[in-house]
Amino acid sequence: MLSGLMMDYPLTLNTIVEHASRMTPRKTIKTKQPDGAWREYSYADFHRRVKKLGNVLEALGVEPGDRVATFAWNNYQHLEFYFGIPCAGAVVHTLNIRLSHEQLKFIIEHAEDKVIFVEGSLLPLIEPIADQLKTVKRYVLFNLAEGQSSSLPNVSHYEDLMAAASDEYDWRCDDETMAMGLCYTSGTTGMPKGVLYSHRSMMLHTLGVLQAAALGPTEADVALAVVPQFHAMAWGLPYACAWVGATIVMPGPHLQPAPLADMIERERVTIAAGVPTIWNGLYHELRQKPRDISSVTQLVVGGSAMPRGLIEAYERDFGVNVVHAWGMTEMSPIGSVAKLQTRHQELDAHGRWDIKAKQGYFVPGVDARIVDEDGKELPWDGATMGELQVRGYWVVGQYYKIENDRQHFTDDGWFRTGDVVTIDGDGFMTITDRTKDLVKSGGEWISSVDLENMLISHPAVLEAAVIAVPDERWGERPLAVLAPLDGGHDPQTLNNYLLERFPKFWLPDAYIVVDEIPKTGVGKMDKKVLRQWHADGKL
Ligand code: ADP
Image 1: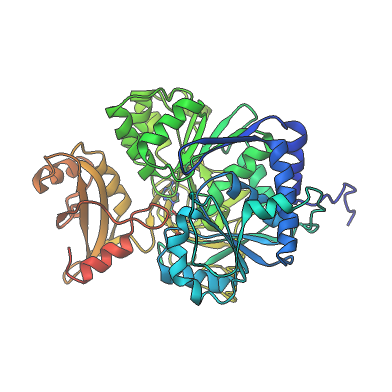
Image 2: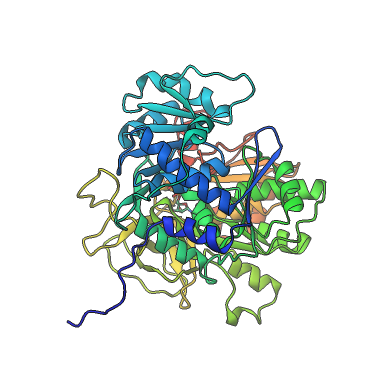
């Protein structure tokens, strides 16, 4: 073999901070703080603070490879942790603030977190379990309210440590294969599992996000990450935006529709990313009280399926382009994006919305296949459903501390996503369901996602979740749980509505009305809870 003769330049995250501080030193990072005031500083300041943080971590005794957790909203401090912790050779572990005490304790113990950075307003969520967190040697607090104190043991204050630290620092991430980040899946389908990213995989993912075929932010963008930084690394947006020096807007705890609408208008946001629930709420807010959100060029949505009706409504009512993407914590997380391609330009508006409602094509860097229950590969014909398997530069190779995992990985090196999909001849993927959510009635599959999307496009329905419930005759039958918007959600009306698209056997056996569909820690409908409610006779 003749080896290539190019440099072996490590793919490590310090490259991003250095680059931003030289190329776009005056561009800024803005945060809406807990008290509502804005705090803004430059990438040059950011660079200095990340270096200070390196010294702070060393002084705290953090060694390369140690896990250092964050318990925070989206803000500039959290962005400093995103870079400072991995650039000090340690692993930034983003804890999901919405988990139960039991799950939090499980995850912190499993990760063996040594230090946790905790935001003031979130102290009450972690204080009650602190005496059980044996691995944690220090809590570093920030954003405390005036006069706020804490019952946590071994506490330091972030700004005090930073004030005392030098901004001269030698990065400690010298090997691209070092672990840099740890995210646990949100547990929609079971106990959380840890995904341990390396510098290399995260840098390649960042390059992946920067492709025009993916999200492609540039220096000119103003990016608002509504998706929490604890949800799959805020979908890689902070790393990508920092590398090119885009303006970053962090919403802090202000995630309700009204402040988000104000923020987008005030900051002239161009790229905003969040789950469908967030954009659903924003849409209704804007209908009630209009704001100018015409600056938005990409309203990025993923995490669960974006209803086609909402994609259409954003474009029709506000002229806003929705970019539907699919990903997983296990994929760092970007997998596919539904941007229109040349052949779609000739479609009429309805045809284009059909395409944009799909989960889209796999971005360069991700390889995919679909297989049947026996692992046999299935055709890409847009109709055959199978389990999606993926591999690529930023796809998980093994869960943290789980070895010989035949359930999630195939013998020939693919990761089993647990999503059931079709892929058409042009590589466009549509998610029909998760393997655990499909309804199997009389031997036929019914897609809960298709039913939900259709139900939510009905003007009387705000939210809809369809679950499989056991049935003596058919094995399983669909049951729809609805949060209504207006009157007109009686079963007959909804059945007639569904019959426009689906065969009769797809009709839910019952419609149950609730005030709100329960959500997981990252804002997805929690069907596990619904199934439990049903089993307990609560529905
Ligand atoms: P969890 O697995 O705990 O829900 P993730 O956020 O990693 O946490 O979820 C990944 C899953 O979310 C995917 O496997 C898929 O089922 C679902 N998902 C992500 N994006 C989309 C999308 N655009 N449309 C439909 N489902 C999606």
